[in-house]
Image (cartoon, rainbow, N blue to C red):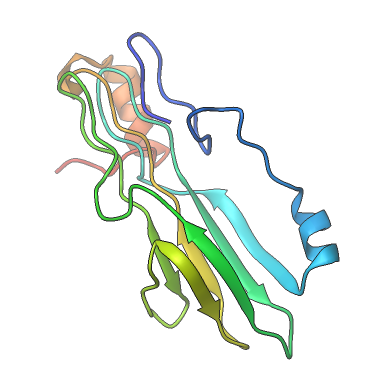
Length: 151
């Protein structure tokens, strides 16, 4: 989620924030899928006086001997989440297979047997100029990989 005036964005949260999903364990139990990882996406938050939240990386594969199809409905893949009032953009998302094959962000997609789907969900945009962030928080943002380090 993007930053707001006076508050950093929440990580791994969509807007509106009432979005819910089934637990990984329940999903693996009812479908022929394995979740290999679901973690915060380093460097995906947009810098700003208030930092954008981090996206996440989700890696899923069909169980051995299966293939899966899914309906992709991802936004902010071709266009990064925009920063506001001088804040920097968050990282755009991507939808791909582990062999580098890029999948469409919309529509029915196929994950063949033996491949993994890698979803890199976008980070949130920053709010306000990064030069106005407290030096302590700016240093922490880089140390914790919340934003890409600025050279």
